Amino acid sequence: MFREIVAFRRSPQFNDRFRYDLKQLLRWRRDVRRFRTDAIPETLVEELLDLACLAPSVGNAQPWRFVSVDDAGNRAAIIANFNQANARALAGYHGERAQLYAGLKLAGLKEAPRHLAVFCDEGTAQGHGLGRQSMPETLRYSAVLAVHTLWLAARTRALGVGWVSILDPVAAAEQLRVPREWTLVAYLCLGWPTEEQDEPELQRAGWQARDAACRQVLWR
Image (cartoon, rainbow, N blue to C red; front, side, top):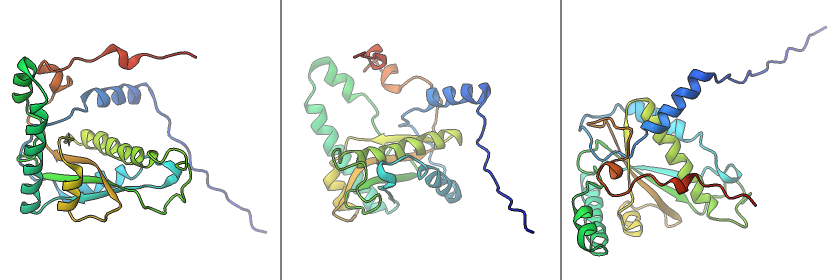
């Protein structure tokens, strides 16, 4: 007679210390623009990508696609793209706000040792369309969750991430020669930060303070 042995996977227990550390992780996850140029071990980058792939996604579609931008020519094209988009953005401000904008450091493209472009595969068959029939944008939201997961994972290894949103996404996709059905969701700079801060840089620079409205809940 054989006795059936069933192995149960025990769920982890998250204690007060873990919850405190999680709060600190969220507080100290900053959008980094000032990087050291030291190289990041490839094994560490692979570890972070593995963790990013644990992010939730609509219908389990896992639509995120990562592109490591290492070629000097491609990086130069992205930097030129940023400079053009930044000039257009600056032209939309006037007076003191324009002066303040012009003095902000808005990207660490030249210093960061790693560049990661994150795309959403709009044509993926993964997930079989579940959950996105009525809200197709949730496919891109899923890619954003992968970005956030990578961001937090990087912070636990003392790495910083900078999200460069001042770009022409169509031009960037063309430069990186990705499939047509891929949409740029985020262009990330990854590296060791030159400083540690728990306060957003834009707040320290006087651009925008935290807004209490973000905590507002409407009851219906």
